[in-house]
Amino acid sequence: MPVTLPYCAGKSHNRATKDAHLAREDGNRKMPSLFRLLFVLCALTGLVLGGLYILATRFEPRQQTISKPVPGVKIRR
Image 1 (cartoon, rainbow, N blue to C red):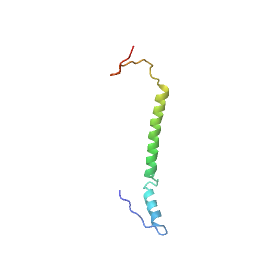
Image 2: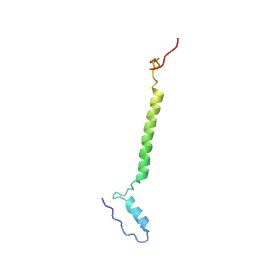
Image 3: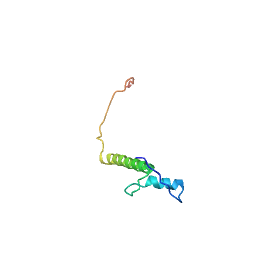
Image 4: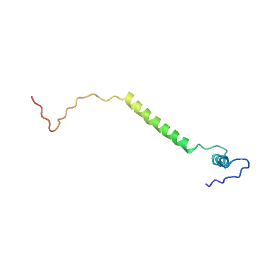
């Protein structure tokens, strides 16, 4: 939807442009895209770190002994 910029007497071009971009039909202001991006990235990072914390504190691996032969190594007895 194209945005038409109104002529605003007494306002500079930057102020009129900013007002036209921030105002919507319902009167709400929309969130700037940089803040929206940062908010989404921080929320996703929080979810990932929270999941890692839960996995690290709630689940313990079973302790077991593992022995595998190493190829090319001879043990002297």
